[in-house]
Length: 222
Image (cartoon, rainbow, N blue to C red):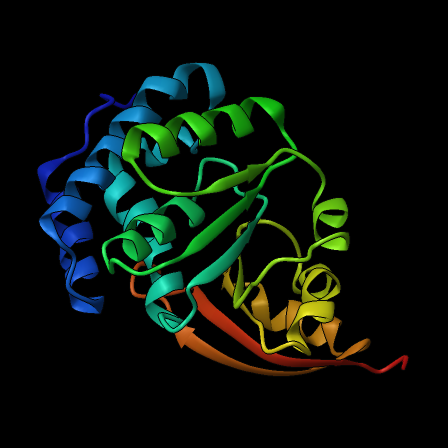
C-alpha cells in the first residue's frame, strides 16, 4: 500500500538527475511541484500513473520525461502523442517555458477525461499548451503548423510510431521517443518496412530504457 506522499530521497534523486541534464530554474521546480500535486489530486478518479509509481513521481515520471527535451533541446515546437497524464509533454512545456522564447507544445489525447486533466494541469502550472482531444491519425493528418519534434512515451510499437511520424521527418522534424527493454525487438520488426536513421541514448532513470532520436525514415515499400 502506498502512502500517497513522495519520499524525500525519491524527490532528491529526481531533482539531481534533472540538474545533471541542464540548469532548472527555481520557478520551473515550483511548477513541477504544482504538477505533482495536481496528479495526486486527480489520481483517485483518473488513475493517471501506475499506483506503484505514485511515491516516485519525481524520478519515474518527471525526471524520466525531462530526458525528451534534454536530448533534443534545439526544438521549440513539439507534438506529444498519446499524452495521457502529460508525460512527457507537460514536462517539456515547463522546460521550454523557462527559456523565455517562443514555443509551442501540442498534446494529443483521445480520452476526453484525460484531455480535461491536461487542460486543467496546464492552466494551473502556467504553461502554454494546446490539447487536441482526438485520435492521433486525425490530428496529424490535417496538421499545418510548425513542428520540430514529435515525442511519445509508453505509447505503441516503434513500427507504429514510424507510421505516425513518417510524413513529418522529410520536413526536418525529428521523432524523440522513450523506449524500454523490448526496443531491440521492436526495431527488428520495424526494419521489415522501414529504413531508419536513429540515435539511441541510455536512459538516466532506467538501465533497461533508452531515448531514441529518429532523424530520417524511408519506407521499403516505396
